Image (cartoon, rainbow, N blue to C red; front, top):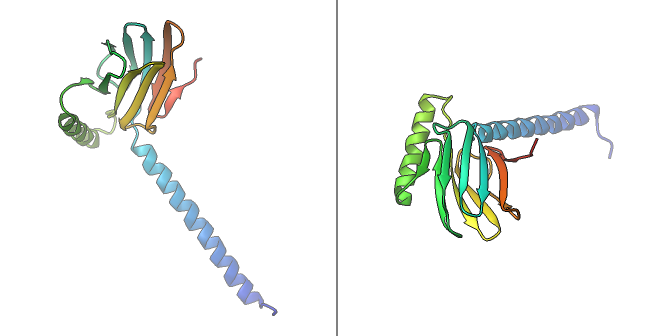
Length: 155
């Protein structure tokens, strides 16, 4: 069956419309994911006894020191160490999100850091593009840098 030029034109317009609208939706989805993350950078140093966090940007703190036993975790956010029950942590995250809406330059992030047998494990709770990060520390001391996107490569 032979198709007319008009039918081919309509089919081409329909296909182009689907492609354009599909690409636009993907771009908007990526833009929303970018907005949901905060801009921060933290160096994590771990040795046999202690964990030291040094914030390079996006925090109201400069350094934090932790002593975590294996399978023990600590929640960290832009203001420092979060203590208390999970309900308190959730309320603090909501408060931080409200502050961030008022001041778009304010970083709001939250993650837990946990010592595991082979190294450290992190769980992103808010303001991170990552959900879980982990790395092994086979040496007596190891250094890693993280940001809102994940683990950074050493320079």
